[in-house]
Length: 487
Ligand code: HEM
Image (tube, protein in one colour):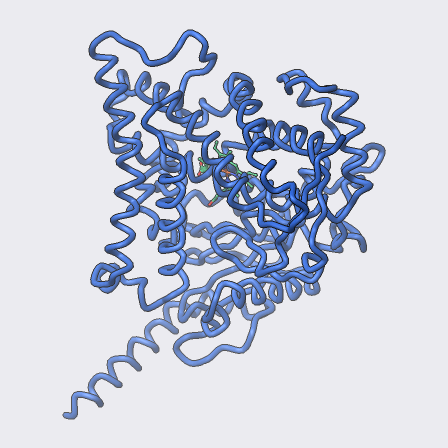
């Protein structure tokens, strides 16, 4: 028989089998909003294209879910992906499902089995150890680093006070990277933030390029590409930084020396991991490398994006900057931020929360349903990939009222009662962010320092800007600000 005909029959049979396997899910999800399906690829045609196209689709499906108040279903070929936007559904799924779908594996070459990517059983073993470096009392010890870094950012921004519009992303990225690296590595002399940043961004870009190209998903194909070679090289740069510092620390420990100076108030994340590894055989050098890379990426990209959006939104609102200035003056005057000040910066917290509600850097996360779960409008069928849609929950007019699209920090101020149930930028449930306390303390410290030194103005283009989903939410354009020294 003609080999083409044999190939076609095999393909058809595979297609029929996949339809049969997914019959139960198809029946369960038949009443949910979706787009028309194409043979073989289902709705996957909706996610082809660039990261801007991906955002437009995400926005469209979020609106469909909002209007119907039901989950949206996407068929990635024969595989169902259920997008949950209702906070109760999101919470139920986040508390039930520990596993992550295979898409996360594309970052394993870099983050290994660190807590972000680890299978459920390993995550349970390690999460408390990693999280112990970011609980309240540990974060309080980093306040000196936060002040130092915020002041450095203020100094770096000085060169942009010539009245021209500029893109603040590089400045805030470097600042958040240096901060999380100081917390992770301690005061290492070998750390070069610019070199680390270049490798980090090349790594993120290459992983994203793979996620958005289904032809690169099979491992054996990807390994034949130049992208794989480049990714291996940039990951090697990142791992070498950590390994050099880790091995030096180990050497010093063996010699009974410590590189922790008397003046350093906090213990670096790596030192904490090394302490724990003395009694915990699971904390191998490889595992410590993965946990450190995870903490650095967790604490860098998200924090940088949040600061970037804060500067953009406050630049459109002089009244918000005036209120921030009054609060900063009343709580701090001209002095450094101390840990006792953080809870008093109430309006500053409202500005951060409102920015995160509208521009959550992580628009959604994925979980793998390893069992059935009953929700209000459907049953999640085992084998489904579930998206927890934080963007949809944060912008829902049903939950936040008609003013949901507006930037309004006052909705967080008493006596107003915000819909905290639908505010999920740090995720929720078992695998939620462990860095929230760190993030809020650092963000407040930077905002206080920057706003008391500069007045921000945003380019008009920002109001019309659209977004793209490049792992984190990024604007397509219109992302420029202007700063002026305050008297
Ligand atoms: C505004 C800042 C931040 C935002 C919006 C944010 C958001 C998130 C989200 C949505 C997740 C869940 C990811 C998933 O389920 O796939 C997550 C997890 C994580 N974040 Fe953050 N994060 C922020 C800051 C930080 C910081 C500062 C650190 C470290 C110091 C950090 C470390 C982590 C880690 C280690 C995880 C994995 C937790 C686990 O799976 O157990 N994050 N973050």
